[in-house]
Amino acid sequence: MGKYVKAISQMGANQVVVKHEISGETCYAMIPRKYRDDFDFAEARSVTEGWCPFLLEEEGEYPCIIYDTAPKFCKDFQCCRMMVFDAEKIPVARVKGKDSVLTDDDTFSEWWKSTIAVLPDENWEEVASSLLEDKGYRAVWYD
Ligand code: SF4
Image 1 (cartoon, rainbow, N blue to C red):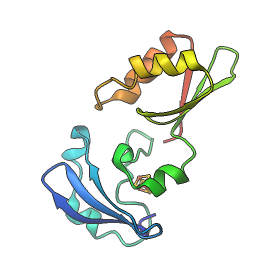
Image 2 (cartoon, rainbow, N blue to C red):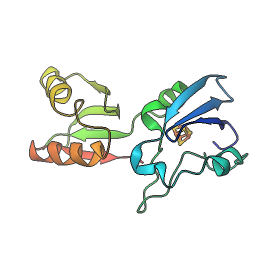
Image 3 (tube, rainbow, N blue to C red):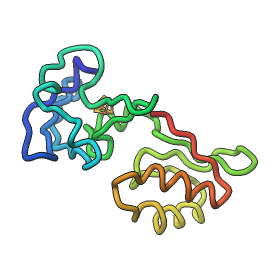
Image 4 (cartoon, protein in one colour):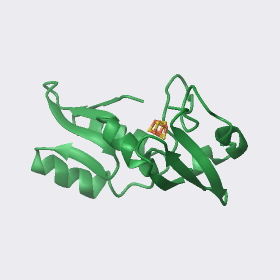
């Protein structure tokens, strides 16, 4: 995706203008606090091929560091970031982000809105996994 996702300019320490060359959209992406020290705008801007400049290797996983504010194309392209399964291994929800959950289970949806969607952005994935586990669910992350 390095060919298509371009870091155009930086606005302060935490915001980057990103252009998606396929959809033509431009967005203002936020660099979450936990990634700010590692994010190098000059390096990101120099990427012309290969991996997307916003993909980071982190303890064997490859999260998108701007996922919550990434171009819409990215969000539409990826079916989800995480799946939630119940104790019988039945899929309960597809999660694209803290504020974007697809589920037919109204009870789960209400619980997610009042418990997970209100978490602070930093490390919300880890907290969500733990809260889901406490409720008997299993979270499987794809990045
Ligand atoms: S989802 Fe993130 S890492 Fe993937 S292409 Fe889009 S901006 Fe890059």
